[in-house]
Image 1 (cartoon, helix red, strand yellow):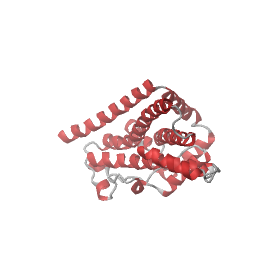
Image 2 (tube, one colour):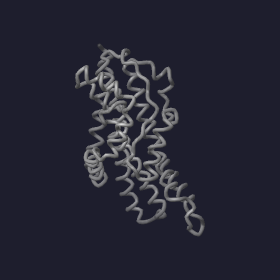
Image 3 (cartoon, rainbow, N blue to C red):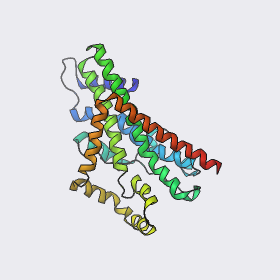
Image 4 (spheres, helix red, strand yellow):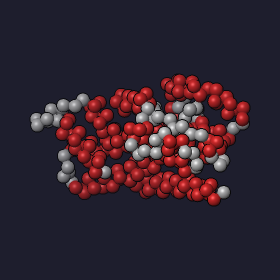
Length: 266
């Protein structure tokens, strides 16, 4: 929250001169306020993949330096550009980080453990979004209690930064769970389909991003994504629902970490 306050204050100072004239374009201001969401959303998503694979016995992420919490180590140029474009021009947000290389043969249960690695990324995005929701509700209560003590521009920028954290992380979680390779959802689906289907999925993987792009522009995904963002709207307007959501995400993480211990005991 302190970092968001500092960023919002800096953006507020940059956006207006002493006469209040705008110095930053609205698009550039949106990008600055979205930076925490982009860096945390991508960086921690990929770190969660790496950390989970490492905990399950694969040393590849450690050997390739992917256990770093520095988000810059996890950014993919094209995937990041697409996310930034979505933020700047208010387009559907699609994007990805630098893929974490995993050797499933290193796992005790290759298919099941690979699914855990795939789920860890979207679960991290949901955890970030859940924590941001609680901060947003707390900030809304605090700002109303302050009774306009903060400059309106600063308050608006803080609201925008928190909104970006919530929306972008829900977007990344939903996008990555599309069951088309190379996205995480396809790795999860491999646990529930035949070997022939898995082979077919591997064959179309080089064309996966093109297929996803065509699907998103065809409107096929509008309904499921609409449901996701309808749920986000409910969460943003209800503190109790947000707390329940965060507890459920925390429970999912607890079960995931417990499964690591179970594998170590086998």
